[in-house]
Length: 180
Image 1 (cartoon, rainbow, N blue to C red):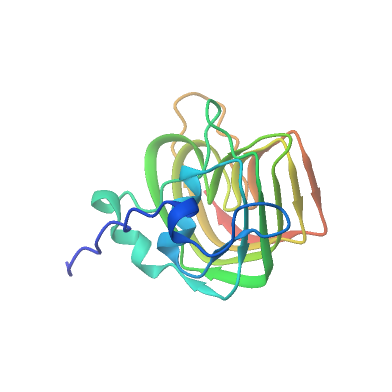
Image 2 (cartoon, rainbow, N blue to C red):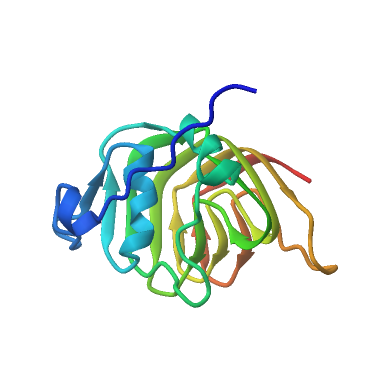
């Protein structure tokens, strides 16, 4: 096995990212470490300003990969505008974890739009999707490809290509994900 990628640098959006996190001046995301930093301010507004190659996430956190943004007790309430850019090769290997994807849990006020996740590799327990483990908000014009697998704790796995469990809205989105 090769070298393990370093964990993401600890970034605080309000101190380290361009923008001020408001809907008029969202924080600007340019790489995987900045993408990971969104977990630190889940009520803010973000936008991609270029494609992000997330290959290095496979070695983060002792091989567990990217840490999903938001959970039921700490949901993502902000917005994420992809500006039609692509996040490629995102890796999340959290076989004993629920609410897994780029976003773990998107609350009613959360919005994900205009982003493509390409060649994602997601492993989870249940409530898992490439974009979101659970979506109670809105996903618009977003696409996903790659693979996702689940080893559910009980008989309910709630796993899907785009989202695992949806109580929100999904419009003009598609997926080409191998689901196991």
